[in-house]
Image (tube, rainbow, N blue to C red):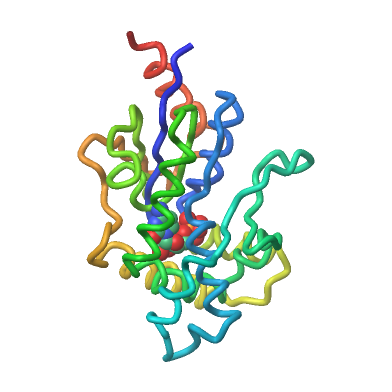
Length: 230
Ligand code: CDP
């Protein structure tokens, strides 16, 4: 059976990773969460005093990049790959609201993007991959056979993320989560290098009123169709 590349882009907390994981599992493909890689770099910057409120030493981050080791390791029990930063499992730490508050500033830096995009392209070299992010269909895999662009209202997205963070026992307010979603939308879509935008050939999916099952069925059917296309 032919293998394809599936790119899923969209605004923050649009449920990209949920549907990407489901698709990868159903197709026997590899799932790559590109956002986790940007989050890992942001965590490194936070832990090393490179970024904090009102301070961002871009030069230091760029000069440290070469020595950063960022990789995924598949966890059989969980059924997905976890993020490692310099040999340490940071899967939990990278998902906090604090990391979300710095990650978009880190993701604006071209040197950071260049390094991570290269790694992402290597992971997708053999196809059979579902990757989600902001620039997957536009920059990382412009030739992907199937591209989705996910949207939903900011309030719907903030509610989803708020619930996720509460489920993880994070002490956050809905207002702060909404503010973060809106500020990342703005930074991600207006930055100079690889801004978040819909690829011309991407299929737009507004999932504000779609159940997880309905969304999966829709994307899975489109994937099957693309795979079977001669
Ligand atoms: O899951 P969520 O929607 O909160 O975001 P994410 O996919 O974990 O991505 C976190 C941040 O990384 C985004 O807000 C972007 O600033 C950046 N990112 C990016 O610039 N390019 C990507 N391909 C993926 C993420």
